[in-house]
Image 1 (cartoon, rainbow over the protein chains, first blue to last red):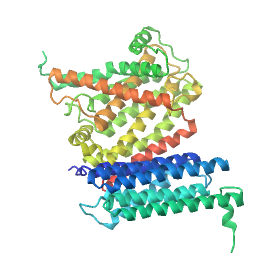
Image 2: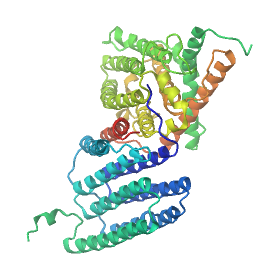
Image 3: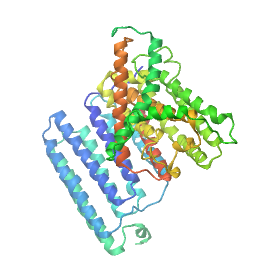
Image 4: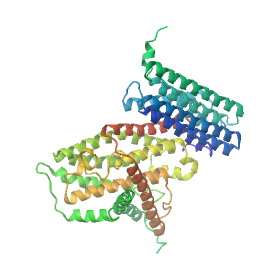
Length: 222
Length: 321
């Protein structure tokens, strides 16, 4: 007995979602802050492509607008600003617990497996619900958490948060692509605010601590 | 003439001959194109055939302390590479008489036996570089094995069989089978396995002469004459076998013969060689755009391949795709 083939257009969005997950893994492994930012730009580009694809296949013209906005913001603006910030601070290496390649890979696999398992355990099997893409987006969110938790520098933590938003927007795109535009735009504005706040935080932290590492923050007491 | 109906046994023999005689052509074309990408004129496309003819005319020399294993191993490896094309879809969409005598794992075991015997011959020499090559080849072989298993599992659970023919038929059946996330991931993982096993950048530089960077190439440094010719021919065949599995099982199983007419079988031979050369060009482009990884970074590359393979299985079981 063969497994049934997935439906015609859902599989393309699934594959795009898979590539977003792969960029998340790559970010998790990237040794340079600069390469992390590049990967974030690539990941955001993939999300934009997904929005464009869904706009074409579902005939939702609002999604084009959303795609354009997220392209300008997430592919161009945020990576550009953060790259400029990195150039000024002259710090390039990611800091954090140095685990071997094998352990990092196994942790990432286990985390995404947990994400898939969660989706499987909810038993919301419906023909209209794109279960695969949803499971992938949960995995993306979890690996983004992992990225933010395991790194101990402000830039990686910010990138972790921003890529988490990419995971969430994939979920919202595939599950509710007909969502009113105002809600999606509100999400984007949230992201813009987050980017500005993170930018200020990173700058303040760098000025006060002369480093990007958050290790000394652990010793602060109230 | 064009409508001559061949017996399946003859097709099976043609299948082995295609791999046997086509492999040096594919290798030669790839190294020619690779040279052109670097702005050199490069060797002739038929150069590997001339190399083999030359080596078969030379005398055989063996290190003083080596035993019969040193001379026997190249033959064992060569026979293994002749056996695998019986099991995989090289020319036809349907299984030939011996096509079902082993599954994907069976083919994998035979390839592993070939690798093992070459490594054994390398250690038999007592020469440091050959032993280094053997040791590295076995180490990285062991690290790539889990990925191969995961790819086999993924192919197995998608088609519910472990026969390469069934996998190819599934891929041919509809476009959405190709875009199935589990299939995309398994194909990517297998692509990385082929990169590793054929000794391409980023794992190993194919045309290097620096012994310290060698993995697969290092094992055969001490061989000479006809046994060396068999080893070189064998590694070209291994490359074409892996290309064939990637093309005809995972990526593009089109252009295969669906009957035993002479014309369609000949067309399938040409289609296979053309597809293998296209794939080879992709590998040559990768060869020229990336640098070789440091030896201790290769594990990261293999870990990434393993990640793709595991995700493929996971996403099929739990993610519903």
